[in-house]
Structure formats: structure tokens, C-alpha cells
Length: 219
Image (tube, rainbow, N blue to C red; front, side, top):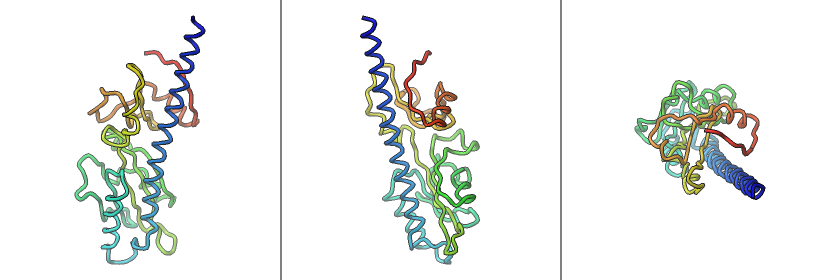
């Protein structure tokens, strides 16, 4: 009776938690692999932003874009933060300028690799994640940054979640720390440039606490 229904519901919710954890691991693996490819580029012998001939760096960036997906765009800047190469060339109209990347500014500030959401100025753009890795000179100082954008929307890494079958009313959302939907299985979200989850504040707290949970929601 009622107890059997409650047990069935509890089991179904727990299965959803496991599914969410698997999706999170898949997205994290994709992002870490992409970040690792940028780090390999930054430490390559062919990348020397102190020389006067950028030919090798341009070829290396083209190879990075061609063989190290799933980047929507990759770019290379000099010490002043000026973009000297991008791939593809010219960049797609839907990709914001690297100057709008928080990851880029943070990489210059602390000399570390970063993955962030877009800056507030680019909030109306497509939901992208920005990755940036500092390129170090021989003296250890930052001589430039290699970075890129990854699309987690319908045309990007959402292939990790689209095959899921969760029933008629259930759906999956990949949400950033601000509650912005980066990818979803909800068909009605397709084509929207920006969408926020209905539980943005709650999800933000869960992300901050790095907590997995299952709860009942009311709509």
C-alpha cells in the first residue's frame, strides 16, 4: 500500500541522484580534459611568446582547435592581453570576445589555470564556459594566455544528457554556480539564449557545499 509507494518513490529518487552524479562526473571529465589540452599547449616548446616569429604558435593553436575538442573557439594572447591568434578564423559570431572572459583575467592575475562562466557583460550570450591557462616565459612570468570556450548547450556537451530517459515529467539540467542553465533535456529550452533554473538559489547553495541530495519540489 502506502509504504510500498513510499519505498518505490525513495528508490526512484535515489536513482536520480546516482544519475546526476554520473552526469556531473562526465561533464567534469570533459572539462578537465579540455583544460589539460590547454595546459599541454601552454608548456609546448613550440609556444614561445618572447620570440618575434609567431608562426609556430599559430600552427600549434590551429592543431589544438582541430584535434583537442570540444572547443567552440580557442585563442592566444600576448603579455598585454591582446589576442594574437584565434581558431576558427574568423571567430563565430556567437562567441564573445576573450576580453569578456573572467578566466582570462584571473589567469593573468594569479598565473593559474581557470574554468569560469561568462562575465556579466556577456550574460545575454549563449551559455558557454570559459577556460584559460597562462603561458609562462623563461623567467616564470606570464607572457600570455591560451584559452577557449566550451558550449554546454544543445549543440555541445549536452550529448552527455540527451540520451537519458527519465519519464514524461522528469528532466536534467546542468547548472552553473549562478543558477544559469548550461545544458538541459527540456525541449522547450531549445533556442533560448538565456535561461535560469527555477531553483537557482537552492542549487547555488548545493554547489557551494558540493552536496548531492534528493528532494521533493513543488510547481
